[in-house]
Amino acid sequence: MEAILYAEIYLICIFVVSVLLYWISRRDDLSLAERWIKRVYICFICNFGFNLLFTVFNRIWVIDHLANPLSYLFKSLYLFSLVLGVLCWVGYAEAYMYSGLLSQKWARQVMGATGVVLGALIIANLFVPLIFSFGGNYEYRRHIMFPIMLGALAALSGCASWRLLTARTHEADPTRKANYALLSTFPICLLLALALTQLGESFPVICVCIMLELLSVFAGNSLSQISTDQLTRVNNRQNLDRFVNYKLMDHEGQIWFMMLDVDRFKPINDTFGHLEGDMALKKISRVLKAACQSIPSRPFIARYGGDEFAILVEGTEQDCQMVQRQISEQLEAENTPDRPYRLEVSIGVAKYLSGMTYLQLVAEADSALYRIKAQKKAARAASAG
Image (spheres, helix red, strand yellow):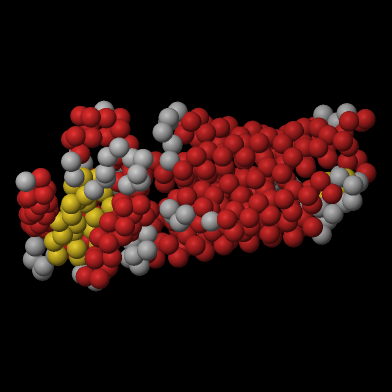
């Protein structure tokens, strides 16, 4: 009876995570973070499935001459998928932070080496009982390397959690701050499983904890989707209005509002088509994210409408100037010789003064933006003449 209940819990977890995978798979244009979380879902569906099969053939439907090899097979695959799931979760956490860490060779080597070492350990266990073995009546027994292996996975994911909590202190968006805190709890699932190892397997703690974690992450991401512009994957106008009004009432440093307009955007649409225009807007949004990455108090980026973006910086004038400089440098890097058009933006900046309303702040930035655009237009006319 206990084994049947155990199997039913795994079936429920498989069903729930499969539903999450189905909903995210319905979307065609997945971001890097969404592609990572999709891999996480797949790994843990496999993880739950392998432990379910282990339970069936080790406890419910025992076939004497197959029970031992099937038990080793499914438990080994369970551990393999657990390792891959944790590695993919680390990838998701880094992608969600826009950290770019996994683009660095040493970080990929650390991730790969961890997977290879733990994978080799699981394979070695088939010959020498280091992680687990089976006694009389195919009783499952853990060995010394089992807590060490879970500890290694908890340590790896713990490093990502520490980075999430650090990033949270610099994040301006309340929704993303909440998601950072939620994501950082993932290693608790592994540590809880490690702590309860001595109590046996009367209840699949790690399975339920991971399922609840993934469900919570999905709910948090769904909330983020409501406030995100679907093309550029930055905040939408509604979230910008809400956030700026909140910040004008509760801020610590100086407030700088930047209005950005893509220069000569209409010719891109007219010459190369609207799909290329969409690609240009996506590239601009990636440039803005990269430019704001190094600012201590993470600026708030939003699509204001059409080819206009807005950035709110809470910090010093030097911080605001650094954002503008970084945008210019990042755009220049995008404008490679093989690109048929140049990506350029004009930026109008307004400083918040006590008593200003949100609309007045936007109007100030708008005026500054159109002064910049008028200067550029005059300079181009003079150059052409």
